[in-house]
Amino acid sequence: TTSTTACTICEGGAPITMLEKKLFLPIIGIEQTCSQLESVLPFVIQDSNSSDCHALQSIGSICGCPLQQQDYNTCELCTSSNALKYPRNELPFLQDSFGFVPTCEMLKAYLISQEPQNSSLCLASQQLLQDYCGCGDQRVNQGCTLGKSIVSEMSLNITELSFLKTCGQLEEALALVVPEESETCSFF
Image (cartoon, rainbow, N blue to C red; front, top):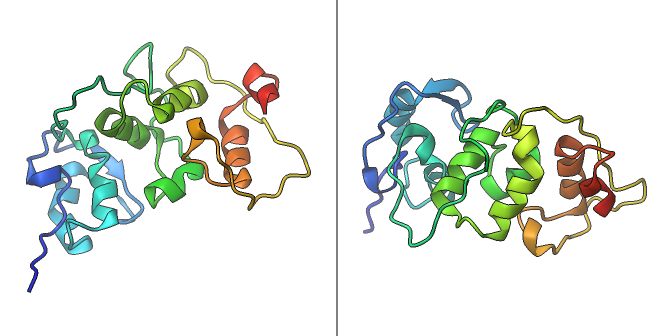
């Protein structure tokens, strides 16, 4: 028989260092501190090899999990500062990639933990989400659309935006984070 180990926030069971950091995970359903989450997690996700566990561990740096040794510079969502003004802004267009609706704070943790500085996901996230997540000095007015005749379910194949799988997800992302009058919007 194969035995499974319960999921922990940090990969390999490393201890969390930000015990009182609060976060909301849809799989749990309520806001909890990292310490509280660590104590209930084995009952919620019982297999450390499950996709839910891997998704959670990919954002473990939120709770102070040690970063795995990388042979590259990791990605920072905010290029001008590390602080997010809007850490709880939700990114529903990333739900398929994460398995739940991540927040800006969760994406930041994922990028730090998992992405090289020059990866297409890193560069696209920086370009599209810095203002929405509050990296810059001002909040932008969003509202970019693809037009009235898009087919929402149509598949996308844009290397730099590989986390967006359909035209509907692209339009949702644009409407949420890109100003209608911007150069980025006119590109689409």
